[in-house]
Length: 211
Image 1 (cartoon, rainbow, N blue to C red):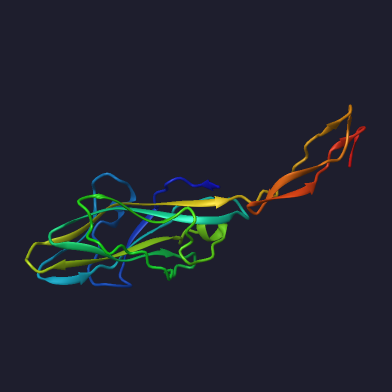
Image 2 (tube, helix red, strand yellow):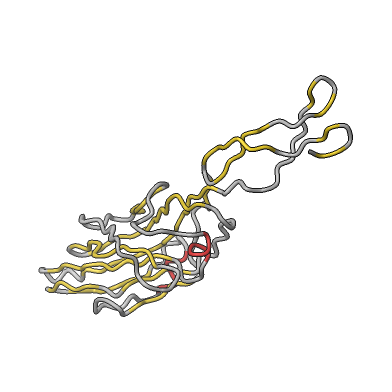
């Protein structure tokens, strides 16, 4: 299994499809640098943010590869009373929002990466290499801010990154030479096809010709 490595988004946006609180400075979530995308403050109320949307990751998954899993990391913190995830979902290649919600039900930490998905987690979707490579593929987070004590509750996101795990299709040309008793003869070899190994005949050189 191969992976893309943790990759930063090229585009961050405040998406008003849900909630009422706007994310200020969404571009600050492109890199971990203690500059934050923020929503709030809220006093004596429970409010829901817009989506903070990360897309345009610039992935280049090889053609025909099998997508094995998607791992999302969001570096975040809260101040005030309490901030919790409300929605964490993937953005599909057509721009729509995926169905599986991986929101964590506990309060946000002082500051740390929260992790969602994994190397063998497809978030209840079917993916192709072109889906992942699409400019619209990404992730959204909506937060719930809870404040009953005039504590200026605020949500902060420092960084969002995604790692995609995949298996290449293994159908490239393979032409090994197998020497048998001083001459070349055709032998079967194991090649990887779609994540499994299968025995396939290959061309090897016998007395100056390929068979």
